[in-house]
Length: 490
Image 1 (cartoon, helix red, strand yellow):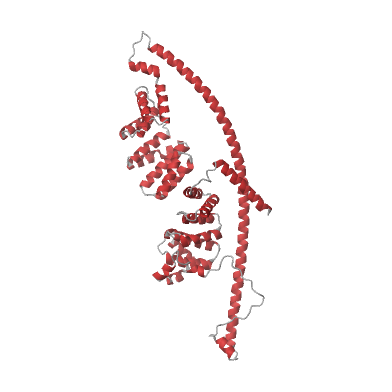
Image 2 (cartoon, one colour; image 1 turned 90 degrees about the vertical axis):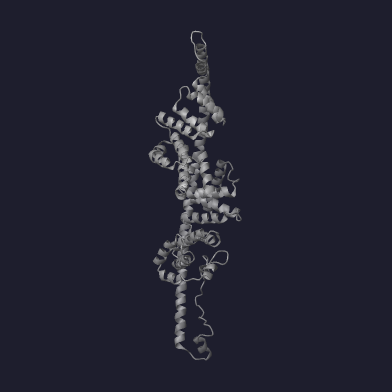
């Protein structure tokens, strides 16, 4: 009882910390957001957290269109954590109620796997035979046949392949439970036998009953009755012993799981404490560098104003004859135009940024200036060939080449459907990009490759790349775009 109270208290602390760090956003989650969060946890192999979120969805939104999918996700999360008994219950619910026959077949096979793991060979054999009758063309049908052969049920399966259409219709969801459930004992079934069982009572049509009514003893019938009774007794005792062994096994598993959960809770509390200390330290450093940055900015601004003042006096002196363009360059300075470009891009005024970047390109452009010119022109929906030309110049001038230049180049190739050039570019630069890019650039790169795979209808690899984009930089706009693609197209 003490360990249970401690566990409850630790779980309460953990939930409080999570709500504090998340800023209460969890409470305001919509059904789809809650389902997406649960799915992300599952694909990140955080099965315990995925179970909690799926269970929360199932309890809160039983009428939602994603309810059946959430039940299937809960069953899979339980299965991954080796909670086989509960996983089997949820697989059974999905098998009976999910509208998609493909997922019903997947859930049915999950229920079979649970039976095999629990060493319920007879039940597993019946489930496998029913699975092959209902879903002969399912993707897992070959695996089901292999398991049935290992259990020695291949011949029995072949004899049942002639099931009529009417019998198959009876096995469909929303009508009646599959026939195997009618012959299965519930998991909590228990039998308490007395020390002396009463004699076996036969039906009135049996020879033993007729012999009893005629008061004529029948030795052969008596022996048959005694042998049948003994076999039933032995079978029931064997079943009870098997049930006791299963309960002991489940008890050991539950104790092991409780110990693991308690250790995980302790580790989480330590991690949360360390994370909070790191946040406090980071906050202090940020404040320190912010003050230092402000002082440096003021000093730099004062020096620039002094330099511009000296340049203006020199340019306007009577001894030097300068054109209007030269005077403007001396008064303003190329760096001044670059600053205007940055400010305009931050405020979304891309036409103003375009006008100023043209002035920079006419004077002393750098590789970064050509890159910004390409970005700005793309924002203004300018000429694609001109954008590619500026970007190519930026790549030629840069040494080393920043990964964002290469990623932008690949993005332009993909958007203009130049797939062959994209594939060649991908093979030449993929390793360079992934080795030198920061997290946000890697997230953008994974998003770009995922979009390319979607164009090639390779949804499995595309999903993997999009999930990598989300995990690499979860707070970036590239991760948000990847999540949106997953929700819309997958």
